[in-house]
Length: 95
Image 1: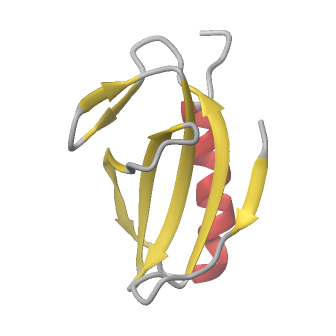
Image 2: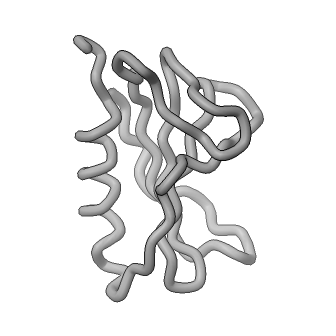
Image 3: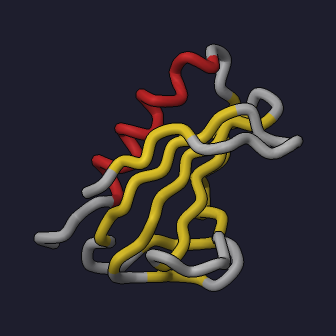
């Protein structure tokens, strides 16, 4: 599992963390396309006081919102902890 750390910010985004994961049985539910499975990249973004989880198939261009993956984040310093928890929940290579 590769952690690429913080990435360049866009105008709507102040910080982000990304990690390559393998979805377990049942995959990851997304708002746009339903369940996606296999080798994915998870991105945890902080935008306007909200943390948002997004996934993409590894090395793809399209990102999808993780269903239920949006919440207020009071302290931006907590972004790394939220990302670590999300990786722990969604990275299930052994099932």
